[in-house]
Length: 387
Image 1 (cartoon, rainbow, N blue to C red):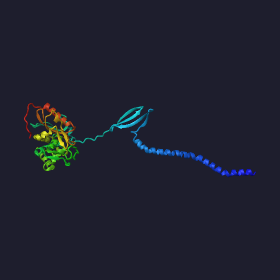
Image 2 (tube, rainbow, N blue to C red):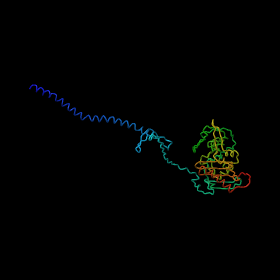
Image 3 (cartoon, helix red, strand yellow):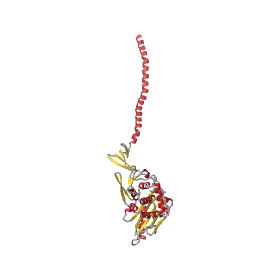
């Protein structure tokens, strides 16, 4: 009996410990799965964050890095993307062990700004029909010896004359008999602020007056013409006033000059007036020679610059041109004046406000063929300067 009681007391003594152990085991059974799940989610979240950080640069380099694309059950390896200009893209891929290049051309829609209308277009002069179907809205052809008008079209219209202005500039410089070897330096004052046109005569370039006159008449060099007027005795203002005085003296009643280059649309005249100017300029040997020169070279520092005529008819064997000048600004259109011998006649031709880049030349060709076919004269005629 005493031994049995001692054994029972010993078991009851350890009963709380057994209960605690049982509770601990139950708690482990419930908490362990949650802890394992949290442990798995933590590296997954970290991995996701890293992926997000790397996503942007990966996408930016996607075209250049290798990527596999499943198409029709086959796998292609894209090596890189090559751009051949703005509109061509070539994709290089590895396909079934072979290199395949796919070229894509992107269509580009260009929106062009409507061309600025000339004064002649705004005045409706281009709607005037003529027998020769000229593209110039103004034209005049006169026999220099007899003053006979062979052809006219809107010849009294007053329009901007662009670089035809330089014909008056060149005539006055030549008539002034200033030293041709006097050196003149291009300054900032000679830079075009009217149209922003370019020039190979940079500020600081120094040439002789004779060289500048040659470039102004032959290749229509704006800075050369402006420098000639600026360095005229009395300055630019005096020179412009003399230009207008000379025009009045020649009977050019519709003509006005505000500067010596023709970049300003306020330099205006009519075909009738310009025919008088061509006739007067033709009497000056220097203007005749320089305006019909096909090309000319000048030394600028250590360089030699080649300049060419702006009128390709000067080089044509079909033409015998005694004097010429071209001109263009958007307000004036394409312009051309010439003295030329055609079919035995000495002709003065004026073409203003021609619509296309080459149409003034085409108009001159039409007139030449027309005169040869209908107004040819037989035998030589004496030259006579029109008054």
